[in-house]
Length: 472
Figure 1 (spheres, rainbow, N blue to C red):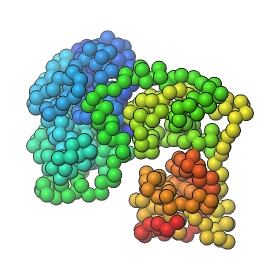
Figure 2: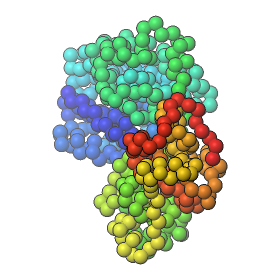
Figure 3: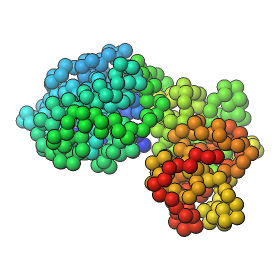
């Protein structure tokens, strides 16, 4: 028997490859399915099942393409109603895989169709639990997402179901089984997940706050609903794609891998109104970019920020990428449902610059230079980190304007006023500046190195645990 966790850091997501005697099950695959097929082929094995723990919100699963290409059965738990052919398993049903079995445990709570898959080895012993978004390492799945799809599913109802699932289905299992969750730290599907991506159930019983002995249903519901941040707007759209189906990844790649010369790129942009998305590294973008393009660097938390900041999942997109990374960018867009990339700039930004096209740049200032100016003038400094980061520690007088909520605050900004913008390390502030520049805010200055460097400079008094400033 082989078990492999295939972890994707950008989405903090774990897919799983399980093989026994030439038969394979893939759990919660990503959109690009060829790596799973190649892995099975190398082992002379055949993919028999595509096991889905639930209808995912934070990414588009590769279940449909993988089933179509391999003949595998897509499996969901009770109550799931997909718009495509799938096997709806019964609670406690056992699926044979080579010499082992996979038992389906219906665990509603994160969503109503949520299941965990209990792995039973050749000797009939339970050895692993693929817990989806029901149980994480250090936390449990948030119970407020399914209401975005069905209004009658209140967070309180879902949290109650989750409490019952944990108590009745998971806690009775042997302490030595290994928990393999669908997500780790950084995912928006939970609150306080551990950086560890596997653990024993026994250790989770001892350390996971949601599994502690004596926790009442009422207290669990209260704790599960406390401190939840607003989920990204693209989540319900991804759920619907996972339920209804989508274009094959092959079609998405074919559409997006259309190479355009600088002249063609400019013409297509003007004709279609496509969003120009620049995915290069942050320093390259700051030095020069196509006017009105938006920066979301592929080496940061690319997919989640795309989902949070591009409201229309069907938005046509033209890519500016580092040469050779175009397909990677198209694939990672598709992971969160942005399937309408219509091409990329051949030769990247250098080709645009060499063609003599108009370029723009991000003005920047060092923390030291900013401090020198601040001694003589009252400067408007925008801190675009999350409110929790700001509340923990920030430069005295800085205004909190989280990137996550950029559209809620910019109406208060004055276009001809100069603002000095920083985040923690310099990635989010450049995203913020690029978006506002595209909207006509031309007097934004990026604080190089972000709050980290600003703090290290020792030039600014810091304020801790105070109510955020909101005056602009």
